[in-house]
Length: 387
Image 1 (tube, one colour):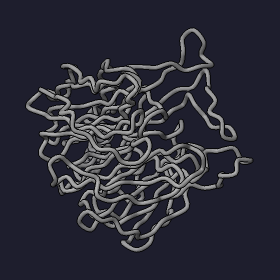
Image 2 (cartoon, helix red, strand yellow):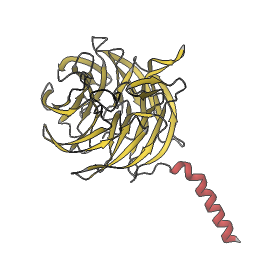
Image 3 (cartoon, helix red, strand yellow):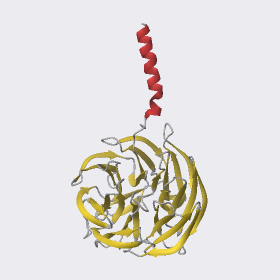
């Protein structure tokens, strides 16, 4: 009888601790922001008047990856897939919302200016704050030390600056890029934390910002590469950046670009054609590879001359300032972002049309779909912590 009582007590204790064991010490967190307001119906974006945005938290350190949490928070397919950022210590995540349902007419959307702060250490995981930033917030990034956050506001032509103290995120100012229609899409810190790059798909520039503590300024230095620069990734080695171009949307082949960060100011040194509409770019944690999500016409009407029934994920090897094609895989339609596991062997790809995260295996030579994770809305933004 005493043994049975002891076992019962042990079981009760174990059950009581379950909520606190959802994230293991060696987990790698990936966060997917899911837009439940907008769907694609034969090439046309349609607003769902009662659509609910959500955020899904995944342990990418497991094989297969596993969902460990889900919360309700604003999200949007409008803007780059880097509309999510995770603190270097994986304590909090940030998710921007470029659009919201129009309260006056819920069959339409209007610009939003909100960013959710999500406590990844809470049990259960929870939204702990909603912060106002600029109009139409898109890409968001933490500084390498996790003490500063920058947000690119596409509808306002500005970059919001926020400070971070523990899990508290506080607005501290903004940078005006000098053109309200510049369309700042993503902003990313260089590894020294003293500069940042901003892609501007409205006037086709990539701006260089200077950073001194919490003081962020536009240096007025800029690059020009391709048409509508958009998604941007910085190598963990600090030597190169890669960004994609949305292009003109006519079914032509679009490009990604390589930036040499060792030059001062940084310069574009290579351009590679990758296919129709490279929506997202992401670099592996060791800086050895770049993954590019290519819509490939999958978001178009089936009668369109440039339509294809699948998207693509392409992988390139980084060799100095040159990219070498390695492999590709056919994936779901209206593709958004992609995230790498720490070991570089697993990728999560966002398929908006089918509302799923496709799991891909990569062995350095080949890339193939190995599984799928369903999500409540169209997955539009994804990120892991960048170290």
